[in-house]
Length: 303
Image (cartoon, rainbow, N blue to C red; front, side, top):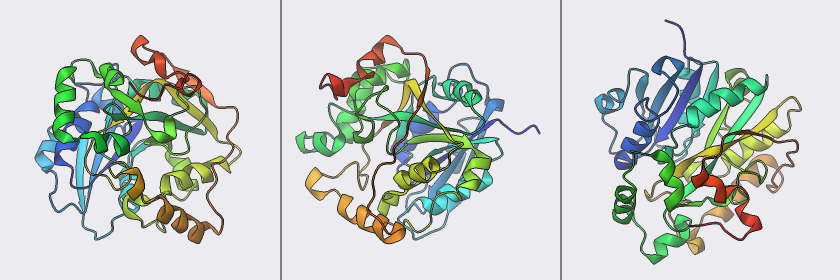
C-alpha cells in the first residue's frame, strides 16, 4: 500500500464530545480538495478514564486509526512521540489538544504550502470558540451547553468557515494572520525527517497538558538555520470548551507560573519567544476571515 503524504496525530484525553467534531472536521466529508489516500489520521487516546469508541473513530474514514495509550502521565508528550512513531507519511502534523476543530481547507492548504521548502515548519493560527478567549468567557457563563447552541446557530458543519464568525483568536495567535510566527502551534506540520532531527517533543515536560512543550518545540526548530517557517492564511483550528488545564481556567488560576518554572528547570534559562524572521505566508483569505489579518493593529481580537 502506498503510504500517505501526510500523517495527522491527534491527542485526546477524556473528550468524547469534542473528539466527534474534531475527527469529523479532519475527514474527507469536511475537508475540501483532498482524498483519503492523501493523508491518515492517528487518534491517540492518552490514558483516558472514559476512552473513545475505537469503532466510532475508525468509522470516520478508511484512513483513520485509533490507539489507546495506557499511561498515568498528565502530559501529552509520550502520546505525541508515539503517534509520530506510528506515522507512515513523509510529513507529520500534530494536534496536541484534540478539542481543536479544523476549517475545511486546512489539509489542502497545508499540502500546498509544504511544497515551498525542503525543511518547512508550518503552523496554522488558533481560535477559541465563543465571544472571547475561554479563560475569560467562562467567567461570563460560557460552557459546553452554550457552545453546542453556538455551533447549532451557524449550522456547523455545513460551512466550516463560519467558525470565524463565532470565535476569538487564541492568546498565542492574537497578532493575526500577518503577525509573524506564533509562539506555540496548535496545528504544526513538518517533515518526519525534521521531527526526528529535533528529537520529537521533550519528555521532560510533564506538566498537565504539556506545559510549555509546544513553545519549546518551536524554539528548538528556530535554532536550526535550514528551517523555513510558514504561516497558513485563511485556515485554522478552533478550540472547544472541555475543561482544559490552561485554556479553560480563569486567568487568576492559570498554571503559567509552574509552566515557566518547569521550562527553566529543563533549559536552564527563562523562556523567551525566539526571534523568527522571514516568515512565509501562504494561502487564500476567505472574506469571513479577513478581520483577523492584523487584528492587534485595530484592537480587534474577538467578535
